[in-house]
Length: 77
Length: 504
Image (cartoon, rainbow over all chains, first blue to last red; front, side):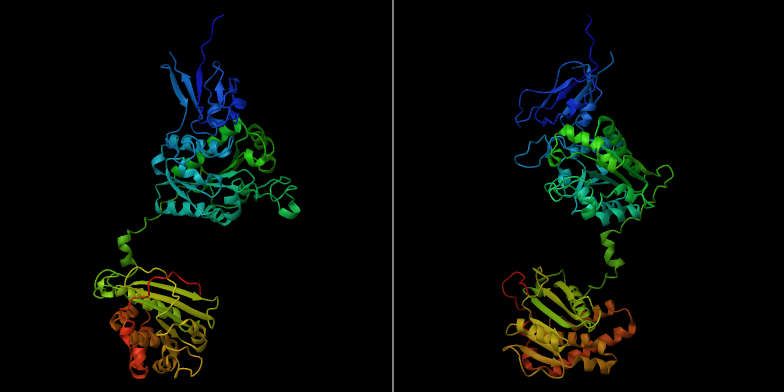
């Protein structure tokens, strides 16, 4: 089966994240989850499952932290 | 990731580092997990970026959780007293018309203590943008009922739920403001879902763009989650905003006159501060009389502390004002502190005046060097506070024979009678001022006359006041006991080492 290339990817600012979970709930393709690890503030930060991001940016908008989420889009070849 | 580009990331309108407190993470806000303020601040930052206005934006922060707005957004920042953000924003916008002024307020700040400010700013149609964050609770102070708390909602002050028969109904601020003519854009949005957040982003951007276009007052109310105080997890709180709050606070545009609104003409620029003395008629007032800058060596060590007291209507305040103005002209540092009751006539009235060689440490006079009493009740009221050696000038034919503390330098000047002979008993205040000048020598009479020439615009009164002033000087020379005229006791005498103001 041919592997599809994701349109984008998302990077969570682990030490900015407070583990509120709004991005996990909001993500349309459901590709975010809360990590089992704790960050240095004692929160379970969000993490990207690693595939399926569409770069829609919803997670960026629902995140209350300025540096919590960065969304990248794959540029057209 | 060479083929990946950032499409949504940290806004350049945020400071690179949040230098907020010693133990705070420099990358995090102080907001709770899931707080609507964080989301909204990002929407603001994005709008500022999109409109290219970072270098001319001024954010006015409120009191409340968002008090620290200035620690996050790298724009001009002012933090206003509780509820006063629209008044502060008005001042900034009017004095700097090119700035983009955003008042950011919560519901406790805007809808309770600041109700008057927001209504009048909106009614004046100030060309500002107001972001009103409504989470229906006092968050920062621990969850008391706000004017916007929903019916039945529990808070620390409505532990059994808000009861309209006791606490009233939630105030719908947008509906209230929509009764006014001036606002051009009134909109309520929410942060309860992806869709609502994107609509909020558009509304915030539009409300700011209105100001960029020079239109009038815009306000966006943002229904916002407060998970911590509501006792809900962040997702539940978001759901509450989406499903429950709009039943009380319907979302939508309540006013949109942006298509027809005419851009407001800019107000004339305020005058250059250097021009103010000319505008106020003060240029030249001090020329030739100051002998240099205030507090120059001429008055080194001087500390004249005067209390003038009488009935309202006797001109006590004018006496004090003339004394202070003349002192200013003569190069003293001065203070004039009026104190009077609500009555325009016949109530008590007194003022504290200080003429100092150096900076005035307090406008209060707790240990006078001179008391000017225009009537007997004032004399009786203030005498107990007088220390030995204090000069006391009393408006009467004679000093009362009884009840005087020892060691005062007290003398009577029949000021009302003298003024009456000159034309009006209302000039008694100037007679007393003349006597005070003669007794103390604290000011050259010419300086006071020049001050009167400037302050009294009615020629008839000016002439009467000048005559009264001179008559007071003559009366002092003629009638005051020698101890009262012992000028060196006051002139140039340094005051006692600086005690703070004493409660009277």
